[in-house]
Image 1 (cartoon, one colour):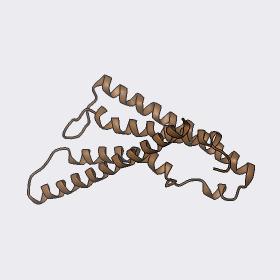
Image 2 (cartoon, helix red, strand yellow):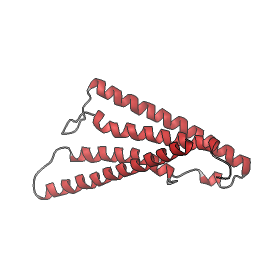
Image 3 (spheres, one colour):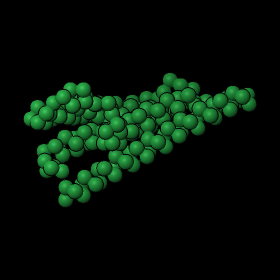
Image 4 (tube, one colour):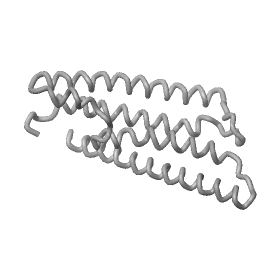
Length: 163
């Protein structure tokens, strides 16, 4: 049962990374269209804003994938010097703090998203898009990141020592 949950969560993180890469390609497309529109003398409203929204969404959707693939900068300077029980304690402590902070972040991103929906907030840009639309990707990415860190934290206690 736990192996199936682990496989499902790892595939969730991988697909989150795929969606993040789509948004990176979307950034490229909006920048190229923006440059081409200036060259050919016409203006498309909101391209800069959409590029920024795509960057925020890509960044937050990529957090879980990158963390799961050990791509984040970690506190290895201290951890590589520690051995045995101290290493286990430091790893548990770091993941416990990270779990709390990522949960805090996810909670307030969800709260911000809900408030934006309730108030009908619009962007200050040329297109005046409803802000909850780009905030959705950020909120989902922060939830997946919280699940990823919690998953890694719990794996410390569930997994076998030799695995």
